[in-house]
Image (cartoon, rainbow over all chains, first blue to last red; front, side, top):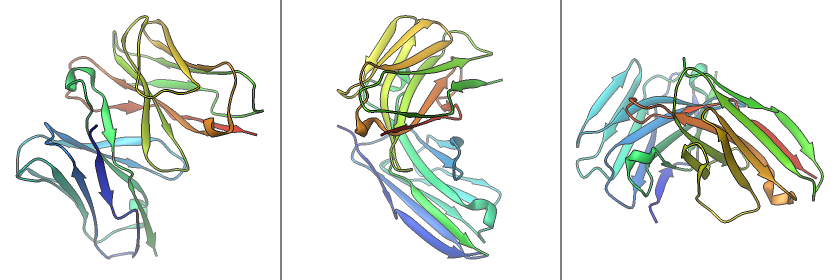
Length: 114
Length: 113
């Protein structure tokens, strides 16, 4: 079945440093989504990428979708303590997007030291 | 509004006891609903999904079952809990007409002792 791999598993940074998490799929994806989960909280949708090579920005966050639509990355510039949490990528699961199922990566846990 | 209510928020159950987790949604009709489990604060595993009343699909064989008795109600159950059922259970919805993102409830944290 489809697998979505995410690296690194953990990342510790000093406040102000940059952070990047990478996502790789075993199959070509029609789209990829990113979610953030604060400690003790639930995942919250950040963004969806659909087009090959697409790049989207949200303030200090930059999201990229690979040309082959099999990989993606999330880059945070100048991290802040509010960026702490687990970042997940997710791709459509088997059965087509009409069911809305998502296969999630294992997530990257970001710790920001003040 | 994409409101999702989950309860209970936290529970501790002995091995072999039954389980019922409830999820209700507001502000939408005929959403797709999902149960995910998150073990040890890491990845999300899809357990069940439903595209309508009485329609349940299971993603993995397990000790759990799901039901959707009403359009906006999704229930996760077990007759006899196992230690391995411990985890953070998240209900999610995908509304018709949205581009595909999921909205999650605040979760139910289950500890089986």
